[in-house]
Length: 177
Image 1 (spheres, rainbow, N blue to C red):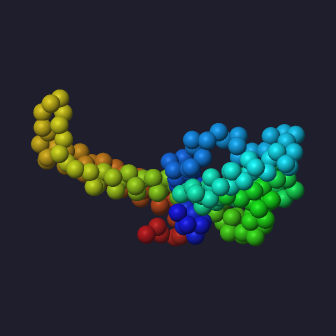
Image 2 (cartoon, one colour):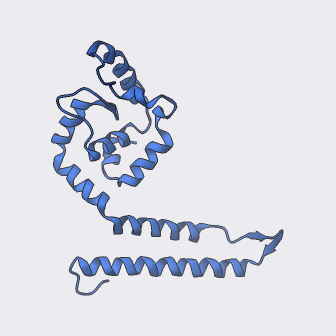
Image 3 (cartoon, rainbow, N blue to C red):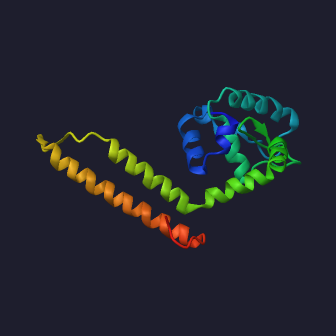
């Protein structure tokens, strides 16, 4: 995943990517945080090892984007490594990308948008799922399964339309298209 891709994803998708593929999941998470009272000399090799782990991580960009969106990192304290950046580097990136991050955080808070994404994904899964089914060891006729699929697709489509209509009305559209 590239940084450009990560910037356009919602928080839930970013978190799912990190949960599924982060290189640090098999490492003690404490390795990425400075221990209270730890000296610079003690922290430096652990920080370097953490940065090395992040550099090889396939979801580093998603992890960095999450860290920026939640405000991790302090400009005056080198206490964390996240997404391949130290605390001061995260703070500097947050300042450099303040406008973009504000827009991203607002989009993350858009629960209706997230709900629409989820409903449309569910509808796609139902629509593309095979209609061949076996229940209690007996094959169910395709027509019965297809009818169940159609009912589920209609139900999801109605839910999508309802959320879209309400959202458009709140946004000031006279007639929801």
